[in-house]
Image (cartoon, rainbow over all chains, first blue to last red; front, side):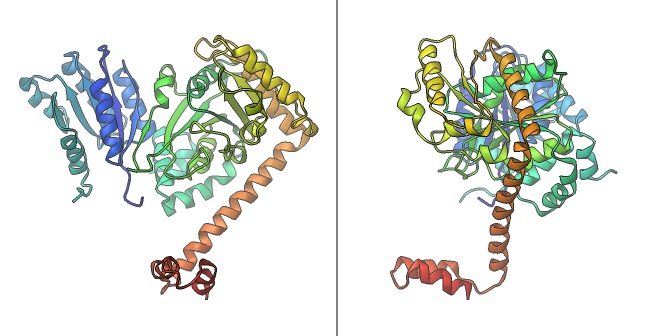
Length: 136
Length: 313
């Protein structure tokens, strides 16, 4: 186990209570050899940024099904920058209309995954953005 | 620009998080920083929390933290650093660290720092880095350090070496009084807790544990292990648990037992370090073909006993 381990925070900001997708992703990342800090439902952007700082994660995965991504994501991004965590890569998963994706990317999000994305795509995107070796 | 050592000493949370990551990576620089921080450690009250999976350890850690933060009669509020260990998958090397879920309402408190850790292949309920991470929290000024182990079985007692005060958490329905008599985890308890005390079977679990302790365990050293009932989800009994922790710390100080445990811990730690360092030095010696020797042992060309002698030549 000498390759640097990737640490990922999986969080569900906002009020929707559906965490099946987040759990599926958490499990897939674990099986890909990552350490996944799972924080559960109804996290505020402040809680997420604070947890990311304490856990010193490389990646944050935000699962949002409520439609509130337009306000929640920019707030998370701003708080991360304020805390000096601008280098942490943020991915968003959930129900995100295509039209909203450019704005999310403009706010610094590294990738957006809609329903039905194969979990291997998520694993590969994380490895790619961190410059980690892809398994053969 | 202050150094990482200075920033951790000043309680900088980001620096602390970075240092713990470097400790986990076994970075030589982190070792040097910890070495410089050593004189600043030894001030925190270090408490281990262990017990079987599902007994409510994380919820109890959160409840206990709230009580320490608020303070109790005779005890001022204290800052709390938490290390919560969960198991690493033996197959993928990955882990799901879920202890924060139960500690949700501690978020936003600058007097609390929570770090999740994976066991990374170590057995015994902790990870290789737990002890060093606890020292980093101590050096950063946290007055209390709570170490929550992996959910353990009967024999994972490493926590007793790292924390001078150990709470063992049980819950109703986890076994009859013969389970309570077995050696291992119950023997390392300085404080025994029956959590979920509002559930059926709590009373009989409580009585079995009291009866087991009544048979004479540990009383000779002057501390009578209390058995407490808590409901971590409501906070019931948690003030009494915090008081018991303070009482145990007082006992450790007053009797010299704390010093004895600290010396024991330091000695065991030095043995581990020596073993690791000797192995590393031996490795650096070059022309050491461990794999070739392993092949010969597996092929029954030589015995493992002969092999190590040859490798040391």
